[in-house]
Image 1: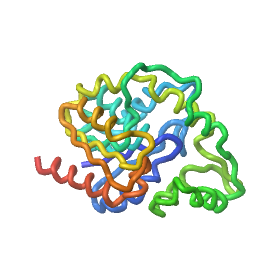
Image 2: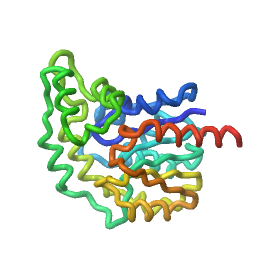
Image 3: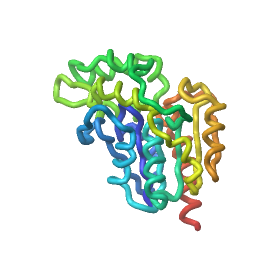
Image 4: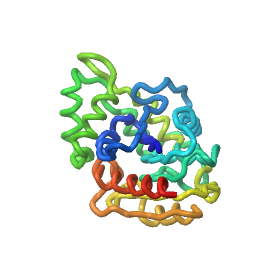
Length: 250
C-alpha cells in the first residue's frame, strides 16, 4: 500500500522526509504542488481546486493520503472528486473552513508573503535565515534540510521556488472553496491532527471540522503548532503506520 504526502503552501515534498524515513519499508510518495519546488508553473489567479486536481494526477486509487494545511485541503478535494482515491486520510491542520466563501483581496498572510525575501546568496545563507526564526526553531533538522533542498532554485545564488506573489495569491483564495460543506460526503476513516499551540486552527474549529465527517477522529497535540509534521515527525509517522497496518489487515 502506498502512502501519499501532500505539503503545505510555500513548502515542497521533501519537508516530509523525516516522516517518510521513519516509515521504513512502507512505500511512500511525495511531490511538489504546482507553483512549488519543481512542480509545474501555476497561473494567477489561483483556484485551490487546481491543487486537488494535481493530487489526482500523481496518486493512484487505494492508498492513504497524508496532508498538511493547504495540502490537506487538496487531498480532501481529490477524495470528493474520486471517492475511491484514498482508503483513509490524515489531515493535519487542514485549511477547510465554513463560509461565506470568497476570495480575499488581501489578508494578514498575503501581506506577509508579498514582502518575503526572495533571493539568498547561497543555500547556506538561506538555511541561516530560516533556522534563526522562532517559527522554524522547533523543526526536525531533516525537515528543514528537506526544505532547503527542494524549496529553492539555482546554484550559488538561490531564490524561493514558491514565488512570494504565488504564495500571497494562494492565501487570498484560501477560503474561496466550499470543501467544508461537503465533508459529509467523505466516507472513509479520517484522522484530524492539530497543534494545541496553532495560530491557524483552534480546537473549536477542529472539532467543527471533525463533526462534519461521517468517520473522523481528532488529535490535538500538546506543545505543537501549525507546523506539526515538521515538529513531530515521529508522532505523525506512528499515526500513519497504524493506519497502514489497519488497512492491510482488512
